[in-house]
Length: 206
Image 1 (cartoon, helix red, strand yellow):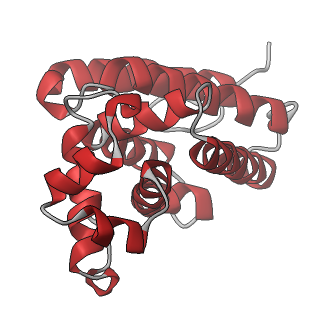
Image 2: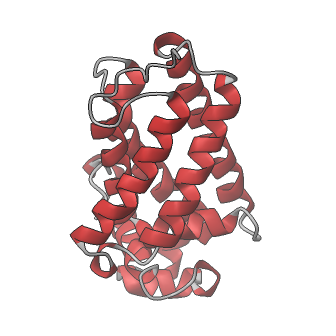
Image 3: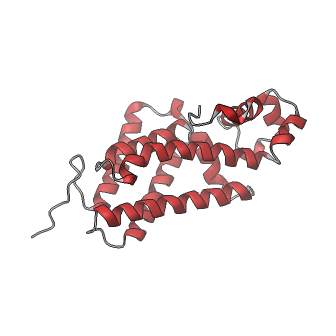
């Protein structure tokens, strides 16, 4: 369950957010109606509509709270307070794993009818691209075209996690998670010209 939702949101909102994440473990987002969501949350439809215009609004709010989790997980490396990429990248992968069905629904919204979620998704991806690019420029000046590298790495990460973690943590063994993460971590290290593990610059001299 999401860790970053503040209790001050109110009981009915917390119930709706929790209900949506449960339903996404079984149903694709297009099959989740406001009525089904209200029933799962144990509230009336009128209570639902006092808080939200539609299911898309709920998905955006839930997505934002999970993004808060990802920001916390990745902050060490992104902010430069931790020089090591591995812990932050692994933390982001763990958040995606824990919320796989939700994040898969958000990615699917990019090509669907959920316009608010699609816009929010594009905004978040642009934010990650900018943050990674800035980190590359500041601490890995030998990386060519940091904007392009940041976008390529984030896009590859998102697609890999979508396919590997989209069914949620119950479907992914620890061994499988570690193997998946190691593939992506190796890709980041290769693109950044650093040694996996020590994360020092690869000696490019002849």
